[in-house]
Structure formats: structure tokens, C-alpha cells
Length: 186
Image 1 (tube, rainbow, N blue to C red):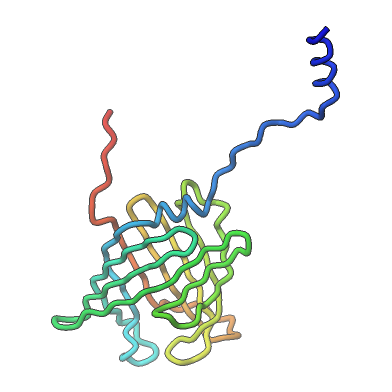
Image 2: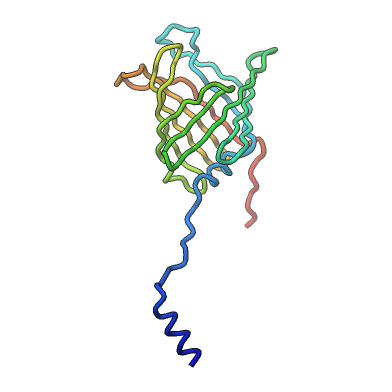
């Protein structure tokens, strides 16, 4: 009788499927970025005339810490006696499809972001577009961030605000991990 009552009670309960675990893209992206990086900042030489394509390379170190709100600490070797440091507060917001970045305590720049849904294990390509300034003039900024297991590239391009002309190279970070990744054993 008890078994019959129990099975009758279960029959009237609505069926609920077990929750499906979905990937957590923000923690996966934070984990993929977290840690130490070393490489080069290649940037357009603004001391040259406007049409110049001359570029300069600076050895660069980057340490990324934090989860939802991250600290990106850069160190640039800018000559034999000049070392420059920069601290950026970086936030990825997949719900709003936004990326924000505030450098050295200044007001944050907020960008529209796409590509978040296509990340796999926090790796892939993100695109960001927003407003800012380039060489003191209002501009539209386009960034492409590529995150791989052992490679981080951030390309920034600019064009005058309101323009439809092609974006022009501003700078490129090309970074790798300072330690070789573990090699899987067969």
C-alpha cells in the first residue's frame, strides 16, 4: 500500500529534468588570461608625419590577476634608463556584451563586445568597438583580442570619429607565457 501511495504521489508531481551544466564563459576567460605574459608592444610612431608607417617595439611584461574585475599590470622597457608601469582595471560583461578598461585610475572606456559566445575554454577571439581619442582627437577604436593557450594578442586600430574610412593600426601586443606549457605524456 505504501508503494502504491508513493508511486501515485510521484505521478502527480511535475517532471523536471535535471539541470544542464552550461559552460561558464567569464570564469573560463579569466582563467585563460590569468598569470604572467611576456612579449612586445608594437606601436605606430607618433613622432613621424601622419602618413608614416614607422613602428616601434617595446619589450613588455604583463601580469593579469582577478576574476570578474581584473587587474592588468604592464611593465614597459622604454630605453636604457626608462621603465614605465601601467595598471588597468578590466571588466568583461557578457550579459551586456561590454568590455571596460580604466588605465592608471582614469575613467573607464566602455566598448561594445562581440565573440564572447564563441569562446571555448576561455579561448578564442573577441572584438570590441568604442569611442576614445587618438593623438588628442576624437576617434573610434576597434580592438581584436585573441586568447590562446600560450598566446595573447591585442590589436588596436583607430579612425576619426564619425568616419567610414578604414581603421589604421595603432598598436599590437603580442605576448606569450614566460614558462613553456606542460607537454602531455603519451
